[in-house]
Image 1 (tube, rainbow, N blue to C red):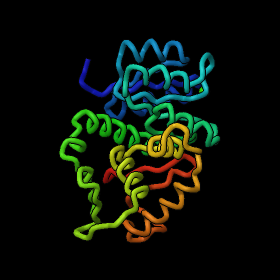
Image 2 (cartoon, rainbow, N blue to C red):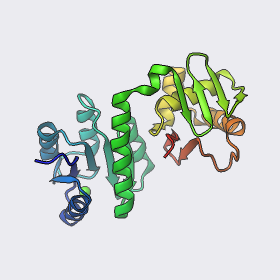
Image 3 (cartoon, rainbow, N blue to C red):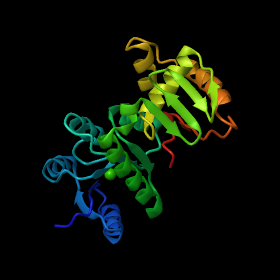
Length: 234
Ligand code: CA
């Protein structure tokens, strides 16, 4: 055994699985593979991999069932891989707790970058420095959760209550994609109507206030059809 991070690839297409495994091995990861959902769940329980790369389309069970099952007991980062371009799959995967989503075909560099990010997030979450001092900052943006105040550089930004709530929620989950429905339900309760329009209007106002160029945001990134992600500086 080595201390190389273990990555589990859950993929029924053997050629793709072999390709990812050899690419990961060449990059100093310990790659293990499962070709269906049942063996994936067994391997997750016995190896506790650092990252799971999960194909949603499996022969026995739907990949989303694996996300549900794993999230009952573990926050292991899950990167969903799918050939399908349906936004519905993406949204569902994120709502169930997937960390990232990559669409086939993808390049080695892209997958490696996402694995590094997933591992970094998992490590950051474990150290929880962010919530302890009550301040989030990235680039020039600072969010003070105790005082409920936001600055860009040394200039205070005046946000409405809703705008502040959105910025604070995204900041607390920096680096992760939050779906529209997650944001709406978290901020306005489980019975709030999933009205993306309200969110979009607020986001346009937020961007006007915090971004240097609202058309090319650097702080809050749109994941088209899915939701928003606060930059964590990468
Ligand atoms: Ca498949």
